[in-house]
Length: 166
Image (cartoon, rainbow, N blue to C red; front, side, top):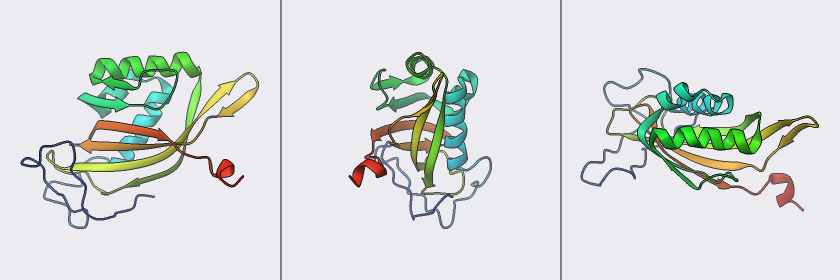
């Protein structure tokens, strides 16, 4: 499911500190641990399940989370922000699961600490109600990972494929 599309973009580090890390030939020390897509998949599952300890283990202590999901905040930061974000989702949606429609990474292996890897996910939250499952709108989320942890997540609503045809 992961697709390699060339060199990883480097955005969060200042240009003087950034390292472009090609995915075709990973730098020495790569390939240990889960792939970036696996990290993001595990994070999504942990959020849905409300497993706070697992969520915090998968994100950087200074993570920035820019969510499109409402109700809730637009911006969460750090581990305390992630705890609040998971609580906000539970309060807003009750039990839910994530339906991942597509996931793609610009690298298939774990990259060294100074490299950034991006994972793009197309997902929708599916609420579990007494009346059955209620799928939400599709969301496109861009995750930025460094040293195997999520440091940034930005999301936006996508036009639903069925609605776009009408």
